[in-house]
Image 1 (cartoon, one colour):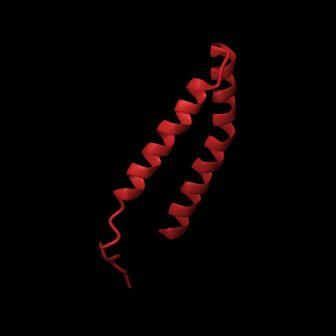
Image 2 (cartoon, rainbow, N blue to C red; image 1 turned 135 degrees about the vertical axis):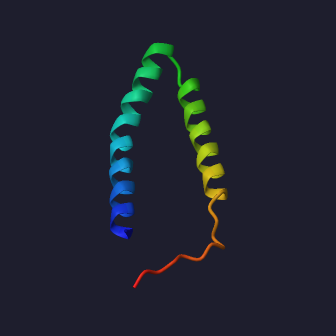
Length: 65
């Protein structure tokens, strides 16, 4: 289970690491400035913060034998 989760997280991280620079390049090319690109990163950071705060660290993991 842990291997599946780690593999999925790494795959999605690598996928978005390839897509985001292309997307930012298109945004900068269309608008001519970096304002919308910076707002994209600010929005992503707020989303990351909210999702991180919603993690329930008090929940015990059930171990299967």
